[in-house]
Length: 323
Ligand SMILES: [Ca+2]
Ligand SMILES: [Ca+2]
Ligand SMILES: [Ca+2]
Image (cartoon, rainbow, N blue to C red):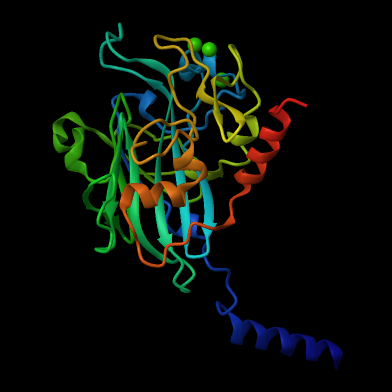
């Protein structure tokens, strides 16, 4: 009898509650971007910074041809009372040119990023308000809400959506990220063969170029790149120290091909600092950075309820202070 009761209870539970208690998709998954990557070679594939099985930065140019390049995107989530700030970093083994002699600006490693600002509206996934992308010396601002007027940055245009996902367009060679195709080499389709990366949960290397559908995996930035932040110095993971709120941090990946230590860490960017921002704010204090970049937004809290970096920075600053 007890066995029957258990079976009936299980059946009722399965019938009544299927889907009702399904875990809502986390915001960083719900809004993970579609990535339209122009690709002239494998060096334009997105992959992990330790794709070669180590965290040494200075062997990545050489190792690119010796290892597979399965796709990952590093993500990070910070949260205030009103918004989520979703940060995504794309890593490429090389920043290069069609000319193998690299007459200009080649360097080992390349990490470019984008940031989404999503209002917590009670719906679980929230409402996307704006997107910022890093492209060379600029941060580009795209609005998904007409209330976004622009601050120190002008609104370039609307966020491009593909089946509800924000979509970014990434250059070949230099890997600048843009929110519309017309702002980069994709404006000339003859010059761009596209690898289309989608957040389908698997980490795949494109079968070829072009590729209509390659899955990338989302990897937590906090547990990977940030965890390695103390691995700093020539011949190690990162190099080029800078100070943020008293904490000494690496500004770049270690690299020695063509340019030296030329690929910024996600927390080391120096773009769009007008309005009193400093390197590091875009990553560590996005509520403040976005308020400066995008101008005032109604009901926009700058008090964090999730931002584990603040405690880490305070600990690092305390450790670095003279005793
Ligand atoms: Ca390496
Ligand atoms: Ca090297
Ligand atoms: Ca170095």
